[in-house]
Image (cartoon, rainbow over all chains, first blue to last red; front, top):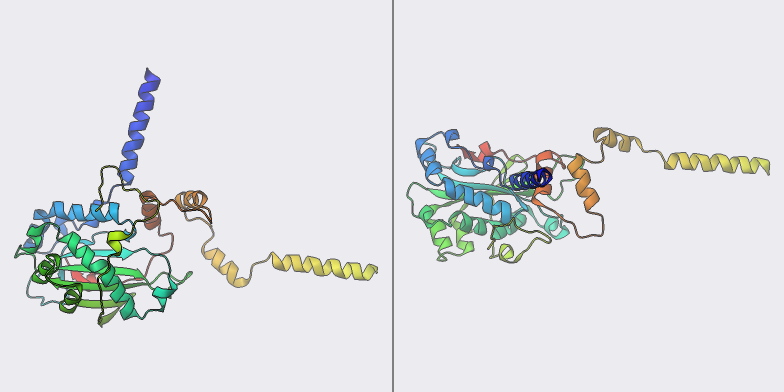
Length: 231
Length: 85
């Protein structure tokens, strides 16, 4: 009897540990008390479940996207007028992908265009799943920051990331997720800044297209955790 | 004949020794990374996934790799350069 109890206890403990390890980390979301304005704190509290769902959805369904600590929240874009407390729902992701000679052969603007085409629209749709977000006047816009390994980055030197930071105002995103604006128009209306490692490159001109990669790609041998459905 | 054998032995030994030795650069790289595996998780992942087989990657593998910086700390734009809290 005690042996069976012990076995059951060990099995329970292992399953709890397994689930704990495979759960998304809450520290990906900026804590409410870290914001510098009341408006941001109010947004973070109001939409806390949305931020958690966004974090969990990426964690379980897009495991090759890395979300760093405190990368999800209602941040103030630095390039906008600082006298106004513009709050954008922001998400920063890093794309973990195999090295590709084709990708490496592209110019930085072309790599940025490819990454925008593949990820920015899809992330905006995830971020705006709660339609309230695109009608809430307190939400000024949305930003998606996408990073990837610079193709010329080779060991033993530290890896260098290329990054684009995309900012779109709320009406533009509302029209995009409603299907009234194309990805090309979204890119034209958005502010897109590039970075080579830590070096800012200024605004990056993009030529984008609709890329349905995320709708069709399935990571080989990857099984979402039980109870998680990925669309 | 004896001299030829001796020379051959010497040359063979020298060849074997030089083939088994790392260059200065290789030693420098090794001294910076003295362990082949960054951690026990890295070792388990590598043993589980042999070349030529379909890799089995779990969320735990990815989390462990990211937490341990298997591939080094990246040079990237800081969040404070783009966004304010």
